[in-house]
Image 1: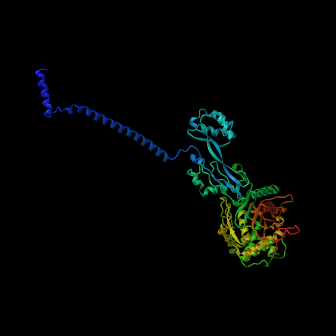
Image 2: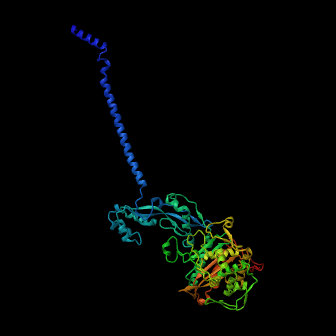
Length: 581
């Protein structure tokens, strides 16, 4: 090595040892700065990626919230999808027999924006679906909407045949359909639902009003198994009642007919029929006449059945006793009207005879003893002038004169001038024979304790005892003879009311009713039947309540009493026992 080279090395070592800028660590610093720069750049990139993803998710979340809060697009006449599958509880009779239940079905819909050829689609659907409204379906398929119902509640066969057509843009949606195994048997009690499974009549509507509709609206009944609703109805008695009513209407060629069986101690309705009726599986078919529930939503002048209430009023007031008599020899003339008896005896009559012979004159005189104010108060107290309270939505308000005058009190005493429903007439009749307690009718099971809490005393027990005697007396000796059933001690009161035609009472158009209780010595049930404008081959004169409505009661009791556990009473010789008072 040359000297010069040695000098250079020495100088270099001297420079490093002197702490100059050429320290050995300074040789690595350029590399260390590069790493830091690379690390900082990597962190920046990760932060940008995280921020980007956060922004994207915020946008998506915001849009979801926006869609959730926005009102749903109206694409059909129905509500949200979860409403379509809303379940309803089964409806059972008192013995557990099914009156209404849900069954699964499907409905046909279209997505018009996916329809390739609307004309061809309509033609193909018409080969499967009967009575297809071609113009309506075509307009739906050509609409700008994204969803349209085409046909609700298809049969499995129809679904299979439509699937085989392979039409683009056509689909099926599962739904529930209400099914009524008994058809028209209890239609006015059970009611029916609309196409969206919502109750619109009868107990179906009542169930919705108790909170089911609110639960369905928020989707809480979609797949829930709901507790069945048990009614007070006995399907066996209901079947008997309907058979008798339908037979009587055909036999007497009447406009309508109906009846009710009710427990006098609890107010439970065991059977009720209004005919014409309808099949709730096909409610539209009964829209003209069948929807009208004449038992609770029709008001009628109940004729001489009202004499039961007038007599009870007079006795309960303490101003009339069973042993009293009234002069029924002469007609009553008041305000240009003449009140006379249909089958006048032209003599003084005792109270039982007034009841037995259905004397208008004698009944009017008993009402006069009580007075106008007392008469109106009594009919209000016993529930005949106010709207009846029960679960059925179809209940009509009775009608009465705007101002009660003496002529009104007289005519109302024998059943003209006040129109009320047959069901509330039966309810008031039950109070006359059950010891004097008015109990609101119910279509749900009710215990004796619940009945006691729901009852109101409206007449004295002694008055009720007297009324049972009069009912029994009339059942044996009067117009109720045709309702007698051996061994069951049926008592009651007929009512034959002239109907108002063109503003005047007609002698050729009657509304007939029979109010009865059995066994009348210790009543368990009240039965009321009516028949509107009955006709017979013997002329209208034979179409009285004793010949039309009373036999209906006889047939109902004779067939249903054994099912209700009522044992007949017979003597040792096999003859029916008659109860004496």
